[in-house]
Length: 220
Image 1 (spheres, rainbow, N blue to C red):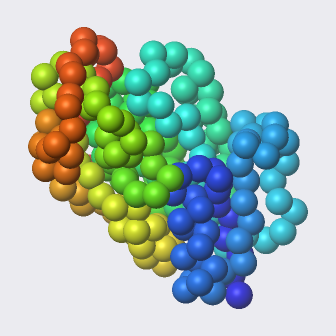
Image 2 (image 1 turned 90 degrees about the vertical axis):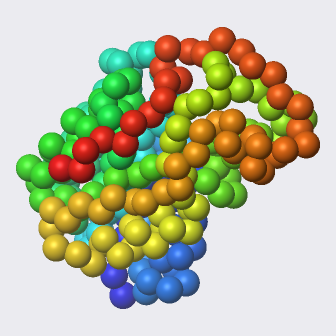
Image 3 (image 1 turned 180 degrees about the horizontal axis):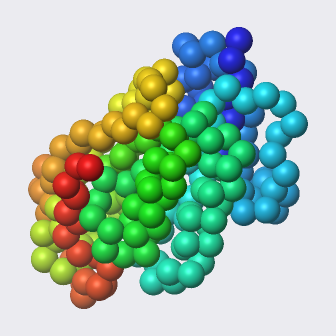
């Protein structure tokens, strides 16, 4: 039986990946997540004292709207460097498929270069939806009135969490340095409102500078 480390195992995708690996992947799972306390913060923690066959690196500052580039980089770049330096080409990294225009996507883009340096595998993520998620689909499902920023023409690509989990498991079995681009259905915010929540009222608010149309970057 192989041993897998999942960083960010208490986040959104982590629990889904954990269940799939235990059920179908033949893995023993170790989790690492700051939600258990500072002793599991990837920026400073001691790593498990067991041999790890693969490290699924999901832990990150995930707020794409943040303007605090320093704090974002401190977690996403420096934390990832610690993971890469420890597990090297055994890492499967949750990258971003979007253009590096805001602190979050810039930090993820920078990490790709370090992943190449260490031979880590990568899954370039679009917006993932499903149970436990915290994106527009989940926000709209909970809301009585839909809050839409700007004109609602921000277009993003969306994929179900089951598809993301399958991608991570498949990529773990590829050669070091492999990159997979998670495909998704491209929709605007208004598309989502009209297609999935047509009977709900909506109101429009001023659009934040970071909440722009997200462009899928040219594949490298």
